[in-house]
Length: 273
Image 1: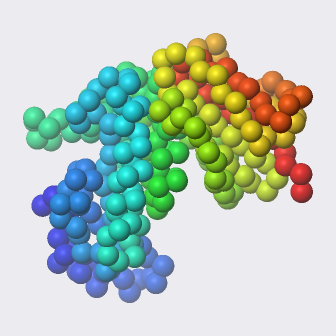
Image 2: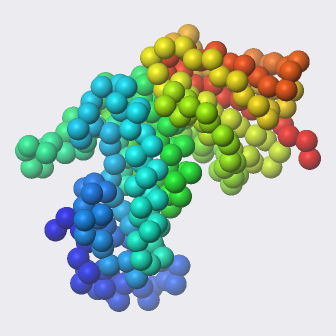
């Protein structure tokens, strides 16, 4: 069936629930949000409501894929209106549909854009929408191969690897609120861990964008992931991640960054205690 049957949920909780009081139970669909929105799964015993997500069911061009990012936020908010305690879980998030809808059981194929800057910028846009939409769990992509975060045959990575690596490095921290005046062009994620603040800014367009950022300390370090650095960042990822980047001391209460098409800037600073 398209949605986890109530009888299966009851059986799973009855049989497995006694093994650990901390066990989490999830149900939902292996397909898309529309399935659970049409037919809400039984939620009183679920901790997670699961569905998959990708941006290429109806549209495929770069602009439309980026334009539809806020749709993720809306699905997450809608799930939170369902009855019960369950929180939304997207599993998996992919750039292209996993299955070919015209041929049952056939892999939908990889998208070449996953290997480039477009895939990295889109990933940051997804993370921004998911985190601020109240997601409880998120599974991104495969690990290796053309639909993963790195090739399976060598030690290089795809640019989106670095987006996820930044998130991992801030594990144990917290996401901070921010105001982005144009989410159709820019994605932003602000994280704080102890006194370290990390700001990630992505250009979601195919043209250069100038971004003015308020609220940063006067002295910052920033690293660019764009067409000028992609070769080093993907071929030598560990060495590239050790770089502190460029240092900047602002003379005004803001910093201005010029971000190349589908480029990403990471800004790290130490906040006063």
